[in-house]
Amino acid sequence: MVKILITNATILTLSTKHELVINNGYLFIDGGVIKAVGSGEVPEELQYPELLISGKGRLVVPGLSSGYTRVSTYPLRYVLKSLTEDRVREYLSTLSRTDVYYSAILSFTDLLLKGVTTLMISDIYLDDIARAAHEVGLFTILASPIDINVGGYDPYHELKLIMQRWHGRVEEVKGAILTQEGLNDEVVNLYESYKCRVFIKDLKNLEGLNKVVDKIGLDNIIAVDPTEVINDLKIIRTYTTLNSWKPFQGLGIGDEPSYNLTDVLKTLLRSRHNGLDILFSATNSTTSIIGLDDMNCIEVGKRANIVIYNFTGPPGWPLLNSVDAIVNAVIYGNPVIESVIVGDNILLDGNEVLNVGVDLIKKATNRLEGILRDYIR
Image (cartoon, rainbow, N blue to C red):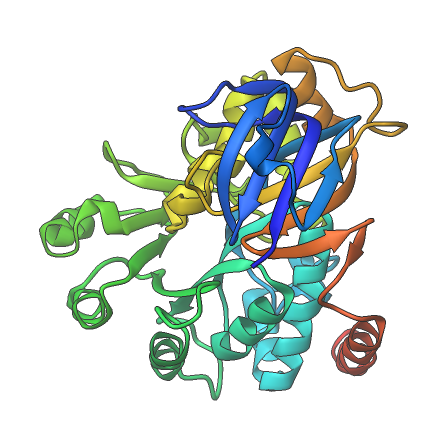
């Protein structure tokens, strides 16, 4: 358990218990948990950490969160929108567990470099995606798509694997259910067996939802890109329904070619939404909605989940003190991400992903390049 002290930083807490912006701030992490946040001189009892990080010219913010993500299609991201659903299923049916593991390693490396630390994933071979998430150090909610139609793939078996091997046993991974056919008795039975969150993709009919809310509980149901909503329903928006986004709803990458959550935030900011509301949704709201509310902001008692931006030079410079300037700098400025700390682990330092070596990246790209050449002609 490493004791980490960050000093002289600008901290955007996105907390309701601390000041929103702390200038000349310090942050003390012990055992992966935030033990102190403040401004000015560091208390004497905190001045002897095992790792001291100078925050001069740096901005410390909570990590971004994607509420809907796929990793098996990561190698297809530049052509995905031009493919039919049948072609995508055909591609997925050719993938082995090892192929999906390597896709996840590449995807998670990309996401980490862009400041994403927590995410919900709905995909095939979640057991192998869980292994990749554990190795990289990202916190994931893995939602088995129970009505997916991919040849040779059994989503119920995969859900069972996640719940037996990972959920409640490894802190970075939790299991969940995703359905595109709405809530029915089958979903209710799965919920009663596993007591996990239930995600509904493309909710169009509230009648089915209303019938089972009393059995599952509205707090355990999350709608991804719904066309209809009811009060208090937790919602994740991707580009598909981004024009319906409202503050405190969550955000997700979806299937965009950029694979970049910041592009989603830029789109909302250009639509004249409030920048602080947008950034709050991409961090605090989304992290809480998917089930990781113990790491949704920078606050004493929360699990450490922070991104450190370097503003000492372009492209981020200058780092100004106003909230609007800080939010615009994070969303528009493309500042350099210097370090990422999640729990007790430093996942990225000096813009280098620490848990994923060059050899593993090369092995992953070499394997997947052959599959792509056969698939895209």
